[in-house]
Length: 333
Ligand SMILES: *[C@@H]1O[C@H](CO)[C@@H](O)[C@H](O)[C@H]1NC(C)=O
Image (tube, rainbow, N blue to C red):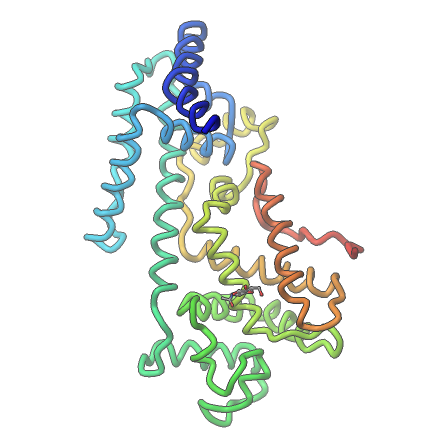
């Protein structure tokens, strides 16, 4: 009750008053201050929050909604009119473009990323919603190629066979293992085996460890569900808003002068970037698992939860990009 009252007061009186005061004193609006003071995910997240909390929230909602509808009609082909939105915000906020020439391009960069993340969710969701079907030749081919990439020296005796267990599927037909993750699970595994073949074989080999072994494909599908859940919960904004590289705040202005183009026109993340992140997380999970020296696979839930907690704490830091190893050497507890 108290919390609700406080929140109400904050949103309707206190926040607007602080903003009004700052505006009077500094002569800039909140969005301008954010765009000047921050870079990378720190900036984009703050812009997103400011737009959501703004009394012009309608603008944000309308913009997002309009883009989604547009995208549904054209199957992702349409560019949302980011520039029109930027001009709209500049008008509403009365920003002088002469006094603050960097504002429009910075804001534009943020909007591209905010929009790009929403579109990525949309796209990933589409792949997940597609169930594996044995009648679909593309699905079947992808599955068979997954085998060939991982097991180049062994051919499958038949489509339905216990051999699938060698790459960590449960039964004699992998079809039944995809379940909730649908084709997203297969796409992720396939991307890993196809694009990072050596690394994938290495992880597969670890999964055959006599003591710390696990089911490669089943764990792979579970890491798909982890990556997916981080994405839809908005937790991967840190990673993708810093994409493709994290500007360090202290270096930001310097970098900005050298590569203004890069910061003003960040590329929105695409499906392949989701797959890439997945590969990274699967490789990291494999290391994490081995470092934990589990008694048996019954420890999976505990270790997975610990891994997720570690990821979440990394993602709370606005400068994080998930790449490079984050399992420190000798990390065993
Ligand atoms: C992944 O593992 C967790 C923990 O064991 C479990 O709760 C979850 O249902 C699994 N998800 C999938 C898609 O297998």
